[in-house]
Image (cartoon, chains in turn brown, cyan):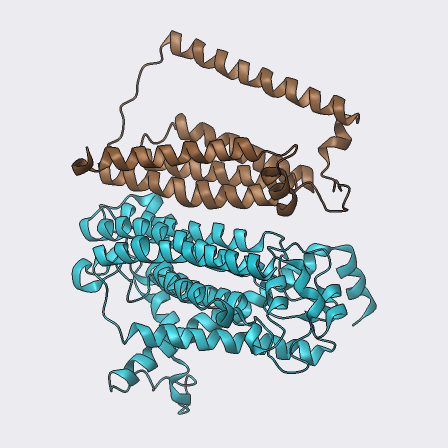
Length: 184
Length: 377
């Protein structure tokens, strides 16, 4: 059952991601945006299969529900016309393949590293299991465990978390400053 | 129950889920139909008219206060010509009504609409991240309206679509922030020790996380004043108003606003496609009311013995579901009443209320709740 669902979501995600950029039927930016939404929803389906319910819900809430709606809003307000077909350039094609290959290498090495540390064969790891910590709380997929991990001082990610939030704050202030003419 | 049915249900867990889905659908669809009738009758009452009171059982003289109206309305929608204007973007034009209707129904998947019937919990998917799932799905609801506005490819629907995308995003933020204090209270596991029927609740909530909606219901089972409407009145007000904005109801129906935009995003739609938008709106109202009941008004519990613990018998289980439906009906009545009492906001007023009033207020409410929790801990 899980394998079937994985295949469905994976194929959907890849296919609609492809259709975002190379859609043979339409060059309409709104179509691309809608396919991006389906990509995000299928990716959140993959998160559910990995027991990461929190990530799945947040993926839909933030990306599909908020970011993409703003994308659509901007596309519609700016009235972006259908973009003309551009000729493929050899340089960009090569660069694209190099980038994809490098990314694939990174994923491959990180997956290999996970298998080694887990000390399990690849099939057993693929199946979602409940991993329990010292207090008996479920670690994988539980929102509580994620919160503990993010906000604890020792061994947690509180510093990177705060840095990321400051980055977001800077971006927000920047956006306001750029759009408010009287503030300049 | 016959032997083979029990065996079938034990071997195929999805069958029970399918039965629950069908059950919820079978209750929600008539509720949608009859909330439309209620809307028309109540609006008529408020405006000192009669309203639809004629249609009864077909081919007889029984009128039943016009309760046959949904049948006639549905038949009318099906038989009308399904006209597709020549200037629309076809694919999106076809998709939009479905896209606007699906999210409102999917929300019901995580809402605990009763305690237990037999051994079955009366919730389709008892997700640990129930509330996040709800907000995720609610946030997808905007696509139907935006796509309808875009696909119609004419001025007024387009303006309606643009308005709705800005409006729904703004109010989603206030809505999400309003719910945070609810979970600050309900996600603290210590309250379970003081419940009147602690062991039953613990068995009922076994294995559910703290962002789960059933656990919020359990939190509110300890008497009338443990309802979060009394503990978090500010959060409740913000949430209620945000639900009005999310469901595009007056006083926030700017995507539709007949006086300026003809009929807004659904101007170019006719027959059953228009009816789908309509049903989507009412289903969203019911889902919003259900959320308010679960989060703030005790869910299926009542502060009476027998109604504040998971059901021990089938009869009590059914009664719990009826209590839940009754509470939803109260909120539906409120939404309809408000629609015919208040004028529409101006668009800048809408944005001001959302961003400059509700967002700071809900943030202040979070901080206040945190301080109170910290001081009393």
